[in-house]
Amino acid sequence: MIITLGAGVGVVTLSSAVITGFSGEIERMSFGAYARSLVITPNYLAADQARISRLPDLDRLMEVLGPDQVEGAAAWRIARQVPAAYLGERADLTVYGVLGDYTFEADMALAQGRPFEVSDIDSSRRICLLGADAAYRLFSGGAAAGRTIRVNGLSCYVQGVFEHGDTVIASRYSNAIIAPFHTVARYFTPTNHLAPNEADRLTIVLRDREMLYDARHAAERILRRQHGVPQSQAAPFLFADPSAPTAAMEQQRDLMARLLISVASVAMLAAILAFAGASWTLTELRRRSIAIQAIHGASYLDIVIQFNSESLTLGVLGGLFGVGAALLLAPFMEAWLGWPAQFDPVILLGSVALGMFSGMIAGSASAQRAGMTMPGDAIVN
Figure 1 (tube, one colour):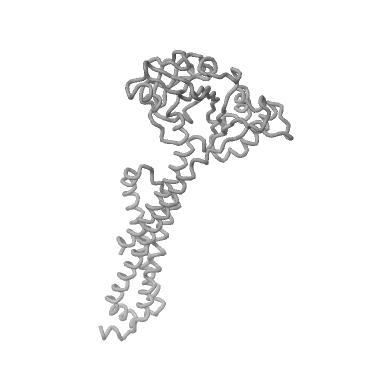
Figure 2: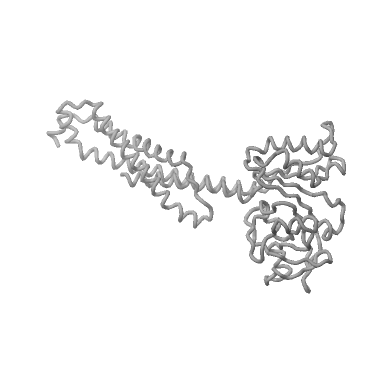
């Protein structure tokens, strides 16, 4: 009976953990660091010069928000459709110039070479990191790190090559080049419409997602003051919302959640029915001993309480057995599905409570049957 009820509880527990883990994986794959980032981009309804962010803007925002709120930041200079070539291979790539910590957004491992160091990012040297697709287009899958390519007609040393990213945000750099901010501003921008200290995008990664609301309001006030834009005019910048690409993945999560909930519900119902059937059978087998209890003065209420207590104990043990089974099976599910099963304490306690109440409900009919046993049944049986 414990194993029967525990099997149902285990399916419910494991399904809940899988759904919770998949929700977290969707956020990680869709947002990356954007889930807790201020992503500041131009507002094209504002005046032309007012909407262009500058490097001093980032310094000022970092100063006001402070290290207790900010985990990292970066300024980006973006040039699109920049011609790149290596020997006879050519491709038009997007070039991202970065000043600050690029790893929050380009959070891919390196397949070749080494990453940028702080001294690299702060320089104007013609060095770059290639996305996986960009490297394949230029080198056809061969070694790229340590080679020199031409970007916008100028030489650029390939310091490293990224692997494919597993987040939506990181995938934008797959067919791109990342280079130091000042290098892109000076050498790799075919149409230079920005001043050397102006950026296309600012990213400020906060330590906690709950800080976003207040940080956005503070950033808007600071940027309006920095650019001399009054409240009567449109805000000079927009704070990008990265949630758009998650719609399809959230639909997939909802479909999977419905499937797992259906499976778990059927499994739990089958476990309750099996427990109830076994409890009824055992009650029938014990009718003579129950009748003897009644002869010795046990009342209807005494017998009902006894049997309900037994069912409650078996339910708790079944819940604990189910939780233990789910924890043991979780590593195999993680390896199969590719994302972690997250066991929240609430889920674990709820699973034990589910087993307890299921045992009480399933055993209530047999408890009533036991309480109605007449003393004369001891002679009949």
